[in-house]
Amino acid sequence: MKTWWKNSVIYQIYPRSFADSNGDGIGDLNGITEHLDYLEKLGIDVIWLSPVYQSPNDDNGYDISDYQEIMRDFGTMEDFDRMLAEAHKRGIRIVMDLVVNHTSDEHKWFVESRKSTDNPYRDYYIWRDAKNGKEPNNWGASFGGSAWEYDDTTDMYYLHCFSRKQPDLNWDNPMVRQEVFDMMTWWCDKGIDGFRMDVISMISKKPGLPDVQAPEGAYGDCCSAVCNGPHVHEYLQEMNRKVLSRYDIMTVGEAAGVTRQEALKYASLDGKELNMVFQFEHTGITAGEYGKWTDKKVPLIPLKKILNSWQTELEGKAWNSLYWDNHDQPRAVSRFGNDDPAYRELSAKMLAVCLHMMKGTPYIYQGEELGMTNAGFERISDYRDIESLNAYRDYVESGRLDADTMLRYLKEISRDNARTPMQWNDRENAGFTTGTPWIAVNANYPVINAEKALKDSDSIFHFYRKLIALRKQYELIVEGRFQPILEDDEKIYAYERILGNEKLTVACNFTKDTVTCGVFTDVTGEELISNYTEHREGILQPYEARVLLTVH
Image (cartoon, rainbow, N blue to C red; front, side, top):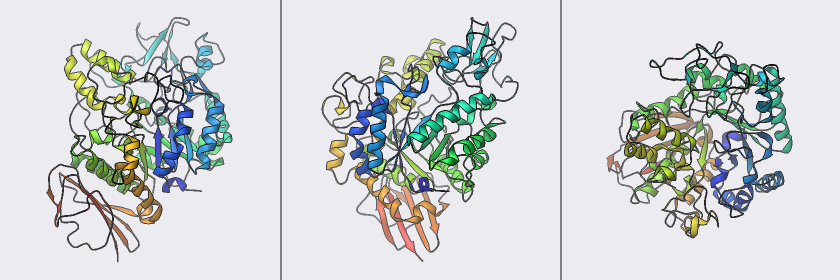
């Protein structure tokens, strides 16, 4: 079994916001092709491409109406083929986003399914009769409201764990599974290099679709009834046998509700299911009374405890994926670092060191290598994300939160923070488009942009280049055992990586304070990377990160 994905660094592209080649304000495939040299210079190995399939765009492409066509906003299949060929020419692989827990309600399968109860496609989706004149159960959808939508054509409800325009597929139907496997095979034969699988842990629902725990009269979080269900591993092993094992590809599953014990099954090194999973424990760390909506800062000790346990408990058994942010999360430097101009570059480099020196495959989200920050939107009209808009309506209209508080929470945690256009230069619209961008460009683009970063040898971009190069140079960074240290320190994240007679010592100051740190006092060795040129004995300076290599 080939394991090139262990050595790889993945770069996620959100196509709508990456680069617009035709001036319509929406990023597209030709825009990506035009910037492949930039990614080659950065040194990444793989692009994870968020969905580019045909879609009505209710959830920015995660509602697919045709898996084998390209969304018109993004171009044509010929544009895709050219992008794939040009990426491969540069040694860059392409991993597609596979969204098969649900389709769009405009997919031909669902159009047929809703026509009648005896339609051949009826059982491709999950239909139920009303219960006591209401929805079949109390499940709430991830984007607010009920997870059930009434359809008067057949006087029944269909299940949608997300938007009502994203009906869930019925994976218990073997014909559905075969349709999905055939489609995946078609893409693999085209020459793509793998799949990132959207909410793949949700494909097997609990039998009987029972009610979940919820306050009286309220919808409950359906996750406990749909995540890591009874047949999920069986179905993924079938997928592996019929498709994945036949190609030299990489797979990563987005696994809501995954535990470390479940991850040992999904991402086992025996290769029966997937190569790795995305877990959400560290990104959900501040969730509370209003779900994810909060402006609380991430506490370091619980963060370390979560990440360290994923490192140690998967050691030698399964493989980790490493990330701070993505298209569903706020910007890394704004959330885990400090986006104040005095500390932004230092803290962005520190976060990069902390993540890229861990064991697992690191993911960079577009613009992270520039230290792009949260959007800072002031008005609800600035937002485009269905989740953010629904949450604002639900919380503000119900009176549970006032408008100012909810806007403050959106500024911190909304998915749109990651979806503002890529900042290419200091010209109009940050060089993203010659038209009107589909979502506003972050106002700080004259200061934070790729053109400026490329010219500055001390930029975050060049720091990422060095980190990526080190990964290629040292097997220790890929394969070394992870050993946490200073676990109770409230300001420093420190750990060791050990392989044979080599040891890496990594220490990162997560604060703007100067802090005492003795981990390097008796360590002599080669400094592989740091975000400071001068060190002070026995301390770490604000947001300082250091990596020392010792050979015994």
